[in-house]
Amino acid sequence: MNYNPKYFFLSFLPLLLFFSCNKDKEECNLNPMILDALDDLSITRLEDSFYTVESMEEMRYLLEDFPDFTKNYLQVEQYESKEELAEELLEINQDSLMQELYGEVKSNFPELDQLEKDLNHAFAYIKYYFPDFKVPKVYTFLSGFSNDLYISDDIIVIGLDYFLPKEHRFQPSDLPRYIADRYESDYIVPMIVTAISSKYNKVDPNQNSLLAEMIFYGKAYHFTKAILPCMPDDFIIGYTAEEVASCFANEKFIWSHFIENDLLFETNPFEIRKYTGEAPATDVISPDAPGRIGRWLGWNIVDDYRMNHDIPLDELMENQDAESIFRLSGYKPRQ
Image 1 (cartoon, rainbow, N blue to C red):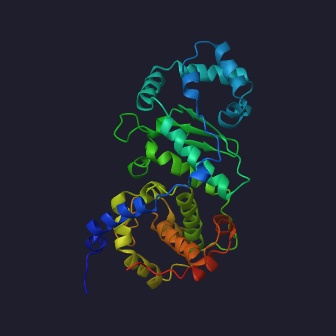
Image 2 (cartoon, helix red, strand yellow):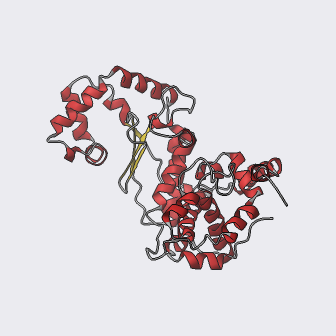
């Protein structure tokens, strides 16, 4: 039978869109006992401090007042002295284009109440599942499109300029459009949570197959969904709602491609990158299949594994055996 993979991949889209939207609403159920266990988070808006100073003395004071930010984010140790760093920052501060960008950030992010609330909920959930988690300080900053997110155990810095609306005239010049489209405010919290997942996502370095890569990302996305149960899947994986729905509609077709081409235990990095690397599409499956589709498939496998075995989230993240997770998942494409 002859078929056009482009049209095949778009079949059943309206039905799946309806299903996907309702599925997220039904599963959204925040636990008030978890949320009450953590004090409210307060985000420090450093762009307001660093882009309103008028003298070297004020700039030096800021560098002393925020030593963790100065050391880790501004990397003061790469300079001969703090004086040199202060001079460079003051020069950036006085640039007319940077001042214009600062004004646009202030206009588009007049307050961060919702971001604070969402991050507080996320940190409460992480601490519930992982009691050793230390809530980091959270700063926002105007990076001049040099750093979108800085995340460590102690501090998180959000470059708000990266998350201006995608139709805004200021855009990062080094990102292709299909990636830049994911840089909007709704993506900030899931990006942060997915990054934090890597601290707990244990891997076996001897398992270097496509399957191992798929399971790694599957665990990361499963972690993020567990921490953010009300977050739609599209903001977690960075697909549009239509792409998520289309993937579910064609899951059997996607899975058959992996099986028929004997891909799961492929170890060639170039081949692995075709299915898990950043790309506008997974062309080897269909020109309309979104990129990184191996990550999405790994997410489904991990979901099935945890659902069928009812194991705690921390135990899932500790499991380094990707092949075992796959075998025990009982995964089958949804009909």
